[in-house]
Image (cartoon, rainbow, N blue to C red; front, side):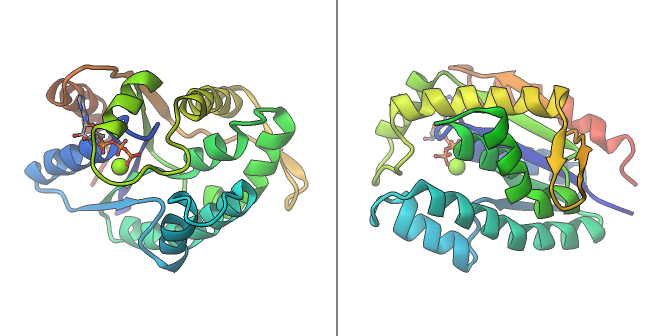
Length: 225
Ligand SMILES: Nc1ncnc2c1ncn2[C@@H]1O[C@H](COP(=O)(O)OP(=O)(O)OP(=O)(O)O)[C@@H](O)[C@H]1O
Ligand SMILES: [Mg+2]
């Protein structure tokens, strides 16, 4: 029996971690084993990213951030696959589509998307989500939430960047839905379905969002052994 892989995507402060935890509870209430995970991971590369780069401790170099995120993901995908092979439901707070949004938000062009595909090719070909839940929240609401939580802000947590990242997410979804990626390694065009469902959350309360998500996510149990 192979498990199922569900990913949460969205802006900083959109409620991914909150809903990932709630979805884990819902599956566990059905007696299923869940592995909840996130990107950046707590592995060596993810830790370096958070501590040195996302915190702004080191001068921001987004090329380095994006390469490190992709490298962190390569380690992550092996761990995800181990759990899927064991039959678990794997829920990840961010995955490949975050890589696209963050690598293309300043330059959301076809070439840049294609480059991002090739940067993430290993993870994409090894493991694709059965369901991606994009929590769409207005960037101004995200910023309010970020500002009201304690601790330091990460480098992407400004209104201008969040607005751009949101647009880059939608470009990425269009690209996956309508387009083909040129895979340098295989020397051919490939088409990949990330099974994205957008949930317009804005200021909807967490329980209502949980209910909407559960109605979507429980369907993947129908063919879960
Ligand atoms: N639907 C909601 N309505 C109001 N507040 C919410 C809602 N969902 C989450 N929050 C609150 O907003 C803040 C951000 O939520 P959360 O940490 O789940 O977001 P996130 O997407 O994981 O953010 P990040 O990407 O920065 O980790 C938290 O303080 C959380 O309690
Ligand atoms: Mg979070």
